[in-house]
Length: 382
Ligand SMILES: *Cc1c(COP(=O)(O)O)cnc(C)c1O
Image (cartoon, rainbow, N blue to C red):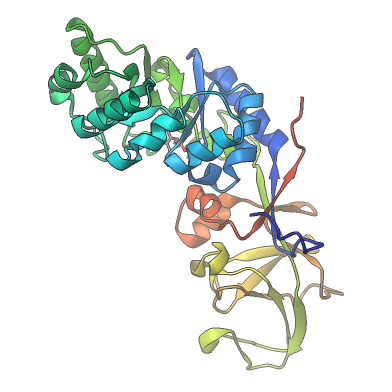
């Protein structure tokens, strides 16, 4: 989000995005990839980090391709001068075919209707659009069922204006470490490719794996890996922590807007769900569930002040959250508060916040709204 030109300063609540840490993660994951090609998945506004700066950083660090889930994200990257292939890792509405062609995006095709719409648009615009056939091996979101893939190819493979560049699947239970299920899904995918090839339907780029496969199973890397969340410093599962060293990319910081002492027995915040036990110093932090700082953190989470952990008290409201800062000496208005990241010798990780929310890191990071200013640090390391 860009500031209106009349503002002279940032507000106190900012997300710092360390692009050199991000680029290190890209290189680390690329180094362990057995595939020739590396796609940086930067969907959902780059998991909350900002799709354009992160996309530029990814390409500069060696990503061959970018993956998004919305035509809008692809168009935004193109409008900012990004030239590498950009794949939409989702089905799209047929009426979006025109924009997919116009912005030279790579489509994921799961239906004859979309294949036909893309072909028609490519002809209208006198262009060719790259397409990857999506095979449903068990996630049951998108994709052609393996036993219908041949029938699909017979009707759609030779459509004009479509270049079948790739074929892919997405596993349902890799993060959970359900290897038997994942191996079955992989075998189903490979069998489908072999059957199609026997009938003359060839797809040069075969791909199946996101972060977990990139980290744990190089036997399934094929021609390309597609990590997302790991690029931002968090392996999807704890068991992977000792398999790879990644650096968290985002920190979330704010400042104490106001601190004051309240007498014992004072209800605090909407509904008075927290009541002071003694004389307590209560600080107001300008961030709330309207920013994507979830309501599930009400009376249930921590932040760092002066390098020490303090408790969230009361309900998180749309724009404000309250902290008990009683045990912080000399605490004052304007003091820095770290919600995510390090301060002093302590660190709050997105994993911890996810656990407090009973969620996953993806929701913590990608859930942060665009109204929180992103500040890019270490822009473009060598
Ligand atoms: C989101 C997504 C990825 C990346 O998944 P991570 O687990 O975040 O690495 C890869 N492929 C597809 C199709 C996706 O939708």
